[in-house]
Image (cartoon, rainbow, N blue to C red; front, side):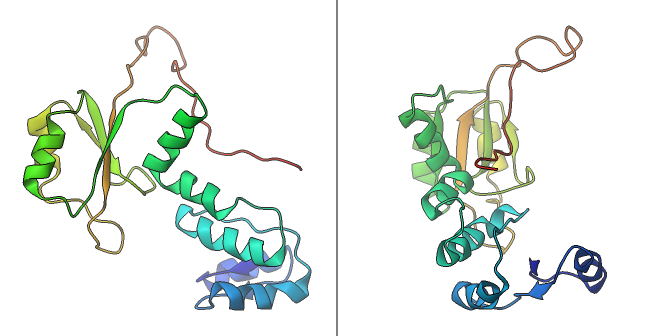
Length: 187
């Protein structure tokens, strides 16, 4: 198991399943160099922020993995929506709001958005900085102060149409949509 920044207790637990190699602070190339002699057969990460790193290490080791372009689509909501549209899948309308746009550009964009909507970081996880938005005033309020990523950097945002709620929750035990969070292929 190649781990990054794992606590000693977790390393001992993982050690029950095989050797543990700490790759904290290593570059992608250095990580691949440490892992190659171990004859590993795959790499997995459970954190979206590490998907690109895992893809690039896998690529260097010749292991099956998501390509870096696939990882971009997985972690960038606008790229993902564009890929869905290109594949002919129904996709809610969306609008990008770059962090470096000025207030005048945001105001013009806000007038084109269909409400109700959802405001969220272009790249993010765990529903952090995700807001239900009813109208332009609520959008402007949610953007003051402008949301930041985990590192304190202003986040590029995306606003997308809020999908209908379907049937009432009291009417049926399940929602009228499906969300796919994982996909395994080839074993």
